[in-house]
Every structure is written in structure tokens, then in C-alpha cells.
Image (cartoon, rainbow, N blue to C red; front, side, top):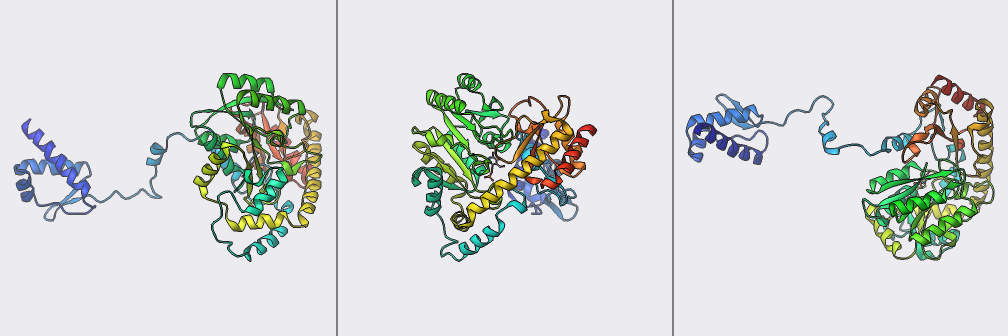
Length: 461
Ligand SMILES: Cc1ncc(COP(=O)(O)O)c(C=O)c1O
């Protein structure tokens, strides 16, 4: 018993020494260890054997004892330890990754929420970027709130003072900053169901608890919003009042008034994602932020959708104490948007050809929406779409009640048509099977082919 105890004590002392030494370092001889530790040879030998069994030490007869080399990684690198360290994956992360992957050549990429190459402002951007590159100081730091002239452009376009604008690298990082800056981890955030899955992910990443609020063809339902406000005590609502992604719905004037009234009554922040401002085919109503003297609405705008996905520039409009919170949250993430991008955006937006690009884009998108909607209704029946969205980029296709949206998406992918299964867009259970289709991706001439392949996929799945 006494021997076991002293072996354990010596083993512990040696383990301690070994961890302080690099792999391969030699330990003192058995005789020196006996002297250091005041024990006999048997105890030292037993302790050394124990540590060799544990893989801490390696003994080589005639050469001595050494700290064990680190185990060689398994072929390809064994990173399984990360599974333990990382814990469960965040809901929705895989869906967003799928959407952000670049589509293989030769596929119809209806899962993508950006303009296809032929509709982008690429040649205008080439000119704008070349001018920006000649600008002095284009590699300098920028103010965290953005290039003053670009702030002024956004302010004029939104109809607000320049000091209420923060330039950001697109909407997604602005959402991340807003969720972090406006609510403490663990607080509830109200979200339409369904809603933009990138917003769901950003809210969850900020540690917020997503509270789904039902919607219909006219957007969020005010009575459901009131009930959710009472039940959750939330002070933050993420909302797409105009051409919502994925449904395409826009709030009616009566609902806009009801939502604003609830915001005032409950002291609620509304994070208004106005991503589709440039995609209205008819007159698009102004953002909620346009009539909000008390600063309930924080507006998000982006240029990635109407110009090109690589022009990662957008703006937040925010007033009151929330401005400083969001400025700090933005700077904490990436300090500032590079001057090259901001100057390029400014050159693009102030070029005489920019309004022409938007006009051409509207006409092209409207033609694509009409062609794909008509082709889908031809093969799937007119009930497959609730309404024709008056803007945005997407159709929210209804599948028959028993269909499995993910199986249909897989079957469509086998036919080179990539679509987004509807369930990923719901904060909770999906109310019915749907697919989100980006009509922007389909040339009108290809619409019948795409619709036929989706119908075949549905039959197969
Ligand atoms: C509704 C909505 N908001 C925000 C974003 C993010 O866009 P970006 O970060 O490119 O501005 C997207 C992109 O798909 C979107 O669909």
C-alpha cells in the first residue's frame, strides 16, 4: 500500500515535470531521480513504467527516458476533438452555407438570392472601380460611419440627415451588428414566419431567442404580433415590410399603421430590412422608417442586390441612443468598409447610367417573373402561387400538402435545377411545403424547361 502511494506521488511529480518539457526532452537518470525524490529504485521504475503506459514518457533501454513525442495525426489530420469542443451546430447554418455556395456551371441556380451575371451592373462597376482606384487615399482608413459623400447619398435617398447613416458592408453584417447592439444575449426577437434565413442565423448567433410571428399574403399579422409582444415582452422585431424574402408579400397600408402603433405602444425597435427597395415593379411604398419621428425603425439598405453581389456596400439608418450602440457594434466587427468599395459605390450611384441600369433591370426582372410564374402555373396549376410578387427576386412555390420539400429540391438538383427547400425559411415548423425560387436566375426562354424539370422532380419525390 505504502509502495502504491509513493509510486503514485512520484508518478504525479514526473508527469508534472514532463508537461513542462518539450516532446523528446530527456529525463534525468533513474539514479538522479532517486536522489532528487528520496525514493528507492523500484518506486522510480514503477512510476516511469506507469507514465510510459499513459503515453507521457518513452523509455529506450540503454539510452534513457524521454518525454513522448506528440502522436502523429491520423491520415488526413484527425480533427474529431473539435466535435467535442464545438458542441451542437447552430440551426440553419448548413442551409445558409448551401445558399452561399457557388452553383456548378450549367445549372439553373434558382436558389441564389442575387442577380445572375447578365443582369448585374458589371461594366458600370468596372468604370466606377477604375475611377475609385485613381482616387488619392483609396487604401487609407475610413471613418467607421462611412465615406461622408456616400453617407450623404444614402441620406438623400432615404430622406434623413447624414448623421443618421452608417455605411456597412451589405446587410448581413449590418444585421449581425444590429442584433448584437440592440438586444442582450438571451432576449427575445420577433421574426416573421417564414423569414430570411440569414437573419434567423444572425439573431441566433447574437444569442437571441427567435419568437416566430405568423404571416399571410399581406405580411405580418398584427393581431399575432400583438399576442407575441404580450407573451414574450420582446423589444425588437426584424421585419421585411416590402417584397419580403421568401414570400414576396408587402404590408398593406392598414397593417403598416397597425405595426407602427404596436411599436409605439410597446417601445419596440423594428429592424426594417429594405433589401428589395430597388426591385419594385410598380410604385413601391416608402419604408416604415419614412414616418417614424420617435426612432423606432432602424432601416437597412444594400447595393449588393441591385448592382452586383461583390459590391458589398449598404447602409443603416438609425437615430437616438441606438445610433451609438450600432456604431460601436459595427466597428467591433470590422472597423470600416474599405475606401475602394465605398468610392466605387459612390461613383456608380452618381453616374448618369445608374438610373438606366435600374430601369433595364426592372424590365428584365418583370419579364423573368412573368415567364417563370406562367410556366409553373402551366405545369403545376394556378394554385402553386398565392400571388405574383410586385417586387423582389423570388417566387414562393406551394407544393402539394404531402410533398417533402427537401426531397423535391434534391430531385430538381439531379435535373440541374437548384432550388431552396422552404422549411429552412421558417423559424419553427413549416406551415406547408414550399420552395423558394429566384426568378431572376431564369431567362424567359428557359422558363418552360425549368418549370417542367421542377414538375418532374415533384413527381419523382
Ligand atoms: C432579405 C435579405 N436581407 C439581407 C440579405 C443580405 O444581403 P447583403 O448582405 O448582400 O446585403 C439578403 C441576402 O440574400 C436577403 O435576402
